[in-house]
Image (tube, rainbow over all chains, first blue to last red; front, side, top):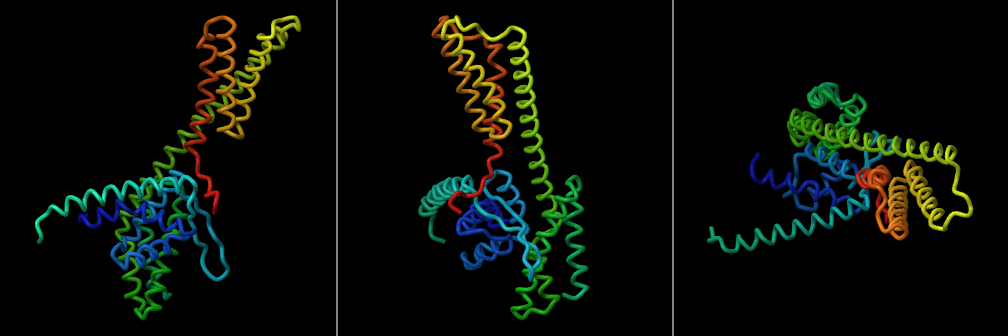
Length: 112
Length: 201
């Protein structure tokens, strides 16, 4: 796995939580919203989304339910829980601290 | 979608399924159904954007990733789910079992020994009331774990405080440990099993 993919994998749960904080969504819609908001920079291996969703569900950060509609196949939609909101705030703070630290170090690097 | 692409998708999903060997069929069906809907959504979006069927399916499957890897990752998540569920159930069964035993023991003692006479000092009735609070908390915990655990532990603290105030020493740990364990276990279960929806949603 290249370093860019590792960074994306490490941030998958944070990205999912941010998207779900704007309302409930199914997996495909989550992937598209991440891709669209990041203008394609964060398009992920979409299969990685589901293990991340399973882990968030187990932690109680998201809950899921199957939605049955007449015109489309059933879809599993995810929504954020109170615990998920807390986790999101914590992860955003951690991420901000991390990126600020990296940015500070990068500023010291010689221009390429 | 035409059949050849259904076959490709089915083969892809079979590979994912094959990696989740220990998971229950229902769980596997859930994952496969979800992935299938996702890939088909991607496929439809690509064809709507002008891609031909084969190209669209190529992109959909490539975008989803290596099926063996996805199957392994999902299987790993299932194992963690099972571990958590087993741990929670073991804790619950243990706490509930002890709560029933203590309640039966208390009732047996109350029947065998009888309740204190009315001429007993006030603190005897206070401690009896605290014991009843602990038992009530343990039974409440069957339905409302956090509330039951808190009531049980609150009763325990008041029981011991009363005992200390009267005798100058704490109650025998052996007697109180089961109550403390049950109360703590209920609270732990409620924390571990906390997956309630967002209250503002």
